[in-house]
Length: 94
Image 1 (spheres, helix red, strand yellow):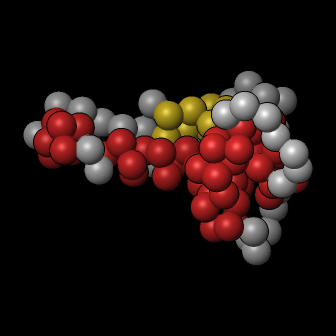
Image 2 (image 1 turned 90 degrees about the vertical axis):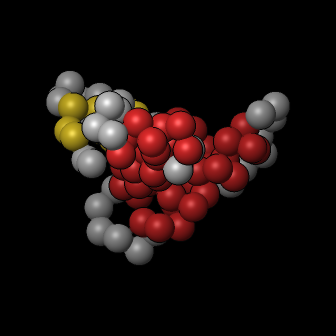
């Protein structure tokens, strides 16, 4: 399970495009496609991007040959989910 969550600080930082230290610029660059995907969608930008990023990571995992082979043989299932910090609810999104 890949679990994204509401009010994600990494996604907030990537969206703000401010000055970042250490490995954060690399992380922000990896998150940017998810922000681009949802920028014009209704709703909360950060939560929408968190969900999109979670799905994207699941898709990337399944592009790995070893994992793809196991998934195709029904020996592995990759599931993306979203955790709402306010309600405690986990929603499966893929």
